[in-house]
Length: 226
Image (tube, rainbow, N blue to C red; front, side, top):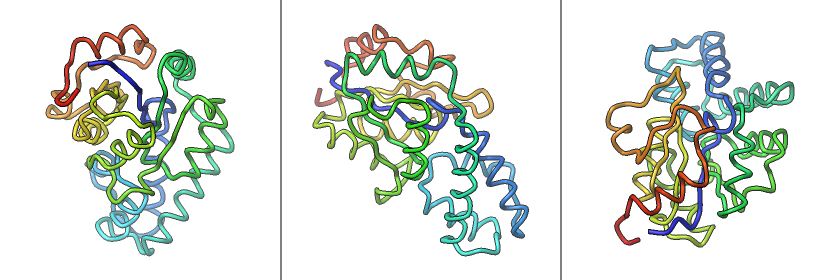
C-alpha cells in the first residue's frame, strides 16, 4: 500500500508529558481522599478526559465529582505547561520532516486546550492538517474512534495511514482503526505484549522515525483494503 498520511499521538511521542500527568493526578488523588493503585497510570493512559475523570472519582475514591476532577486536573496541567512544555528531544524536527512529505494528523487523549498549548509552545501548530482530542469522540483509546475520525478529516483511508504511538492503549486504538502502527514506548511505561505484537515496528526513540522508514512501512506492510 501507499502511505498517504501520518497520524501522531501527542503525549509520550512529541511531549514527554506522561510523567507530568502521573505526578499531577497522583498528587490530586492523594489530596482529595482517593487511593492511587499500582496499575492506575497504565489504566489511565489513552483514556479521554471524561473517562479518566470518572475513574478517579468513581474507582479511586476521590471526593470530587468527575466534572470537578477534570476541570481541576486540567487547570494544573495548563499551569505546568505555561511554565514549561516538556518537548521530547528531536521530536519537533521529526514532525517537520514528515510534514514535508505527508499530510499530518494528531490523535490525542489530551484535552483540546492542552493540545493547543503544547503545539503552540513547540512551534508545531501549522505542521498538522488536523488535530483531534478524544474529548470530542464517543470513546477514548483503546477504541479506534479518534484515529478513524482523524483519517476522515484528512480524507485518507485509515489503511493508508501510519500512526505513531507510545502507549499500549494507543497502539491498540490505531491498530483497531486499521492503521500501520509505529510504536515508540516510554522507558517507564513499556508496551504490553499484545500491543507490541500489533505494532509494525517498535523504535527506541522518536528520532529513529525517518521518512524512509515510514515509506518502507507502506511498501512492506499491506493492510486489508489498501
